[in-house]
Image (cartoon, rainbow, N blue to C red; front, side):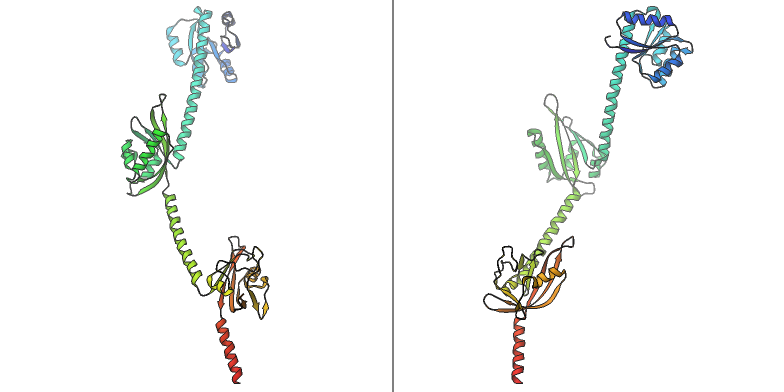
Length: 418
């Protein structure tokens, strides 16, 4: 053996211990020896240090090899144990092997080659067992993680063995269908029948394209539930091939998206309802015989006017009704109060924005570019966003020109008659 071994030598006879050392040295074994003369010292040493192998005499002052082997194994120590004895009793050998001894050698036939083979085999087997135990532990940990993932997953997991045409799945998939494992079984056809008849051709095409062309398998369909209703589901999966390139397995997940689909349908319904309301409001905006102006910004630079208000101003319906336009152009009309032209900041909409509250029943006169004067009463209120910040305003303008003319005429007649 080329590597150096650490060996615990348990024997109360110094001559026998030296014989073992010479035997291994003559066989070319490099070893570091630690010696113990009785069972108690051997146990204490094993609890403090790690060894590649233990060579122990069957006869010790405070016990025998059988009791020491049993005690070592009871303490959970897996170190290789090779028992050396001056007796050739086969029953003793059988008892030692049952107790956990790795090997058993007679001191009368302790040839260097035999001892080296025994130690080498013991160390090799022990290391192989340790490696196997580590692999097993990792496998168990991996399986445990996989089990926890399956148990905690909100998705149904399916595993289709193509050759056997069997499908295995986790409990979540049975929850989605409302069926039990015993009722549904593992037959592929049983799972296929759960798919809505209208969706089956699409699912089959998706499977065929994945298996034959390698396209991604990601399909949405409806799955039957024991309640008689269908659940909206989506499934993704991937096929596996053996070393010869033959398909043998396909695994994937099924997600229940019924709640999401219902929410999406509800959003669609709400959007349709909202669109109808918007259409109704736009129609009202276009036909109402009251001037309506809507400012889309806090500075009132973009003001939309309905046809009635645009006619009051003498501007096209698509033109902005703002005095402070983005391009700096001046409007074709003027706004007066008591014969005085109002500045932009004195206008009702700008005033409401500046004050942060409604400004109602404001009388003013609109002097159009064609010389026509329109007498109006306005009511304006600011609009606020979700953070309670000003985002614009809306105003209504009532044309009372004819009423004012009638008042002037009545006043004239009254004065003339007096």
